[in-house]
Image (cartoon, rainbow, N blue to C red; front, side, top):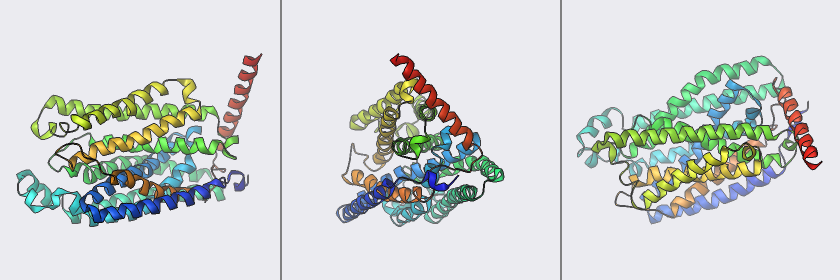
Length: 408
């Protein structure tokens, strides 16, 4: 089969240019904010950056999960996931400014603050210091980029020459790779987010971001697939059963994220220790308390109820609305986690918190669409592709028969 049969639609290039223009303009506006309020600029930079990094890293996890489990659900989004993982070098470059602005972000770099907290003195000497912080970041990105490199390389080689050995290689790498994913995301979330309050700790914090970033990536992949399904060639490939399976996976991940979030809250609140409970005190009162309630309703309750419906999950137009809702609430939840570390006197919100995700989103989407257009939208030499296409064709016939019977 020719790889041109699965070429990306021409609109991909148009979206790439549009995203790049929006991203550059928003980045310039965000840069101007550095002259107005330097500290706020770095706070917003970190939040917007982590939103889109989560989609890229979460896509790596879903890609490895697809190689481990197989199935049509992963086959139809595999090239989207691969394109997302190939943006990781860009995200590494965008991380470097955080090292430059670390003094404005992390209070453990301020000796006058560290000396007031005896517990921080030893912690900063052994772990929370800028050189070791930078080394850990380089190692984390090196692992992510190496995993993405080999999975993408073998997938491209399979396009050129069909081989079951290449599928085996990707499956074998994905097993330990998934373990490395959990470990690296745990360290990344502790270093880059939890250390914003260096005297507070949670044993579930890393797992919370493992689930959150995986959910962000899945919601994004569903949105992209729903857009591609309206255009050839994916219109002839994707069937309702694929969205049904993706909807079930999204339901499971929504529940997993909620389980980790509630477990952390329950353990800390029931323990009622002053050094732990102070994390939730500002986040459950006033405006932040209202946002917390909104996260519970819009990030968990509504998606959970909608995704229980089989008919809802099989409708891409409806499923994509839940995907967009989850993406928006992922950023709201990220603000809820990060911003109170900087605004400890009450609720605080800056216009840069709105510009930052647009700036990083534009740059990231431009890189994503560029990578998406470089390869066929389906791994046409994958040994499982024939069975996936046959299953999808049967699904379409059954759907047509059902419609004809209903009309009669």
